[in-house]
Amino acid sequence: MSEYSGHVQGGASVGIVEKKFFTFAGPPEEMPLESGARLGPITIAYETYGKLDESGGNVVMVFHALSGNSHAAGCYSAQDEKPGWWDNMVGPGKGIDTGRYFVVCSNIIGSCYGSTGPGSTDPRTGRPYGLSFPLFTVADIVKAQKALLDHLGICSILCGIGGSIGGMQALEWAVSYPEMIRSAIPIASTCRRSALSIGLSEAQRQAIMADPNWNKGDYYGQEPPNKGLALARIIGHITYLSEASMERKFGRRLQENSAFGFDFTTDFQVESYLHYQGQKFVERFDANSYLYITKAMDYFDLAEQRGGGSLVQAFSRASAKFLVIAFSSDWLYPTSQSREMVKAMKMAGRDVSFCEIETDFGHDSFLLAHDQLTRLISGFLKRIRSEEGGREV
Amino acid sequence: MRFDLQIIASLIADGSRVLDLGCGKGDLLQYLREKKRVEGFGIEIDEHEVIECVERGLSVLHGDMNEETRDFADGSFDYVILSQTLQQVFDPEKIIDEMLRIGRTGIVSFPCFNHIAIKLQLLLKSRAPVTEELPYEWYNTPNIRVITLRDFRGFCARRGIRINNEIAISTHHRDETGQVVRFLPDWFAKYGIFALARPAGEMPRAGRDFGRG
Image (cartoon, rainbow over all chains, first blue to last red; front, side, top):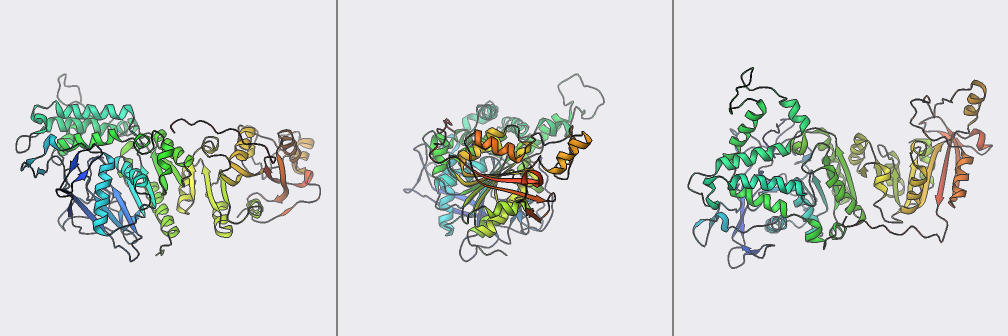
């Protein structure tokens, strides 16, 4: 997801929020990972908004994307000018109405916003993990989230919602913990990354690893591989846009001069914009986290991992109701991949709704203030809440 | 709710599973869910109508009905409904086959080309008929199929489809009131509503291989 997505400050805000931490799986009870490796202790950073009702039936899990974090909504202080990444969707009276629902958003393992990741200290050595951090999968991310919910005393999720790798988490939850999750909304997501997206992912990782400062992941306390990470972000950022949206935003407009410079400085506005995106990103993200999380996305294959090769089989294990949402101009996770999951859900007998939103903002559309998306999410949540016997306010 | 939808609703048993092809904003499905406690699903091609359906708490698939019906297993529904859309369908044989594959009963309604006003327009004016029910000119009509009650009965007979119920109605376009036409329906019906079934004993077509899905 990108900074490109503007926040429309419509409606009220959840106000001042606090990032909290939960630590579990301390040795010797480390958490086994899908790879066979073990990880522990694990800290999860998380935030909650709204009130858990008495029956505990109003929990909505929000799953963040690649570079996101637990800070989905609100601000950390009265002076904090930048609200959470999905503040246009999460809040009182918004699509995910914190007046009705208890929203939980946690930072995924491997990330760099407070949850245990490659930049965290390895208790065995007293030094940052770096590349000794084990590779993990979307299933491992979800398993850690399950531990967090157990800790919070939550045994039922009304709905799990996320875009991109956040959608993968929603799908994984539905298949891995069917008794816990009543519904899921995967947005601009997929059941398995295509060769195209794996290729683009690898190009981004190679950009990081080609930076001499990367030093095989051992750069903490030194100059980090900012050039590589910025380049990775630039490639990634392009994949979140579309031809039409880039054409509209930049066209072939030149940066400062009215003529070409005939050198390799910045001629076009789009170049300048991408450089800026790359520069801004290195201030807030860890290069190793980028490597690990993109790898987890590439490994994701619900049919192979949960259905013995059959997506229908995988969804036969689920009991959640689904609302699948795609964006017409998303070429990273195209509508065809959403339709593929819908098809398997139908064949598995699941209750599924599907909507393709016509927009030219590409993959990033899910982060934009978008009336259609808001109406879909809010309508679906109300329905699930009333079907679950919840009190409608 | 439109009069023809009220008649269709009267054919649906309580607590059944219903699929509405081209469900629009979900008027019929919502009515059936409230009055008959059905488990309703819709297929709709228009994004804005799909969103309205979701807001009304309905399950709906955004897409083309020919594509979207394909993935449902044989006999997935008690009823599959195609209301006032048959005249716009490119391949009516295929869609009716699909309806009777995935549903035990298919309910089809269409504007009748046999109504006296249409007959007279053609006879007296030598013009392609334009009525309230079929308000388009020949060059811009989405209604590419010209269907009469007798044509439809013949179609069912030739394909071995059993007609369990046939109701001819007269109502103004999109009106909530109307009446069932019992006298000379082949002259006075504006819409025909048929409940169809595959003859008993006929096996549904063999399940298809969808690969890894």
